[in-house]
Length: 498
Image 1: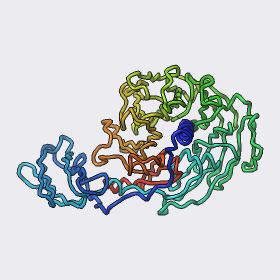
Image 2: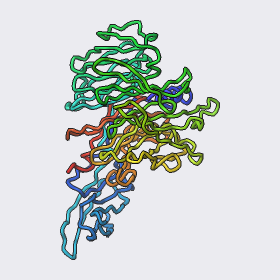
Image 3: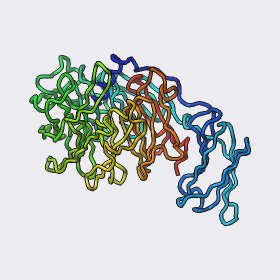
Image 4: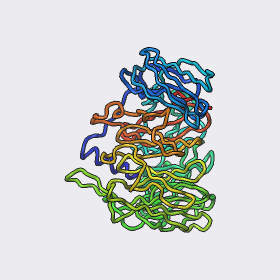
């Protein structure tokens, strides 16, 4: 998330576009869907696009589907696809009612009226105020943990309360600038501290920092927040950016940037034995090593590459001298066993700066957001090859506009949810087809100011998200990097879980 901080600082000082606040989410009344068939619109209003359709299995393949707007009398007839889905499009009022008649071989098997469900209604904003520079959100059970870089703490929220209630804060030493958290078990977690050149071991039950492992030349003046401090040689930390745990070892990526955010050599990976605190490191194959993800028994480390900001024009460009890549790390030998090169494209000059790799549930593919545009890259994890790279990315918003797909999380059903920082949205992707905003998620969730008014000079900066997987709703929680708020999305309001 160092890239986000860099972008945000530049946007604030250079363009004054960063906003704060934001009204409550949702508008209108809408209807609760009752099955696989739904009429859906992005938000309330008249003369708006309304899709009336069914998801997979909604109708017998090849059956006749007749949809009528009971308020206007308009009727459309279609045939169910081979998977039983259908989705004719109407222009109408979100207070309209639609009748769906499904017949198969002349026999009517369904004849029901339904109202319109609103995508905007599924979003709740401003659920809680966060600390400055929130950089990550992780969910464990019914608790959300938000890492705040500027406040040097981790806020804990009880998600069973509506709205979520803050139930405690874990404080770490000043000037730590925590960016990421990884859980060893239900009690202990490790936190990567970018400016502090350190890693903190925290107890999430007692809400105490138990141990600070810090570079010997960067020990903070006040370490009272932690019960114990251990120093290590300066070579082991240089801008810790992300963290994960595998095989009882803590793996920390180090960006290795200079004071001007430029690479000063390849990135590297710091490895800490969780039992003995023994520390070692391995150099990565590229610069600005950041996102790290355990997948299929290995670790995938994303080397972001570099971006250039022109202070005269206010434009960002990809630095073609530093091509991004992904290192595949064997956690038994702690060696690089493969490198996936990501070739930048002159055709799409701003498609660069990939972030953390998110795997599909079957572990066959991985998706990455990008730092400058609203698009995603896709990687074949079985063959370690790029499927959708900078020359043919999965496009969510216009590649000529500045945007930031800051995070992507994929649900067990294969639906991916990605944040759009600059447009304040959460888009959906079907990882089976790579279709963006598939029915019934026909438009991104409006999660901030600029989603309501695309021309707004203020925006919330919808940033990181986490998915609740225990069957409770709302199931998606997100944080905003500019307005520093917690929000949620209840996807069951769009289509109930089966």
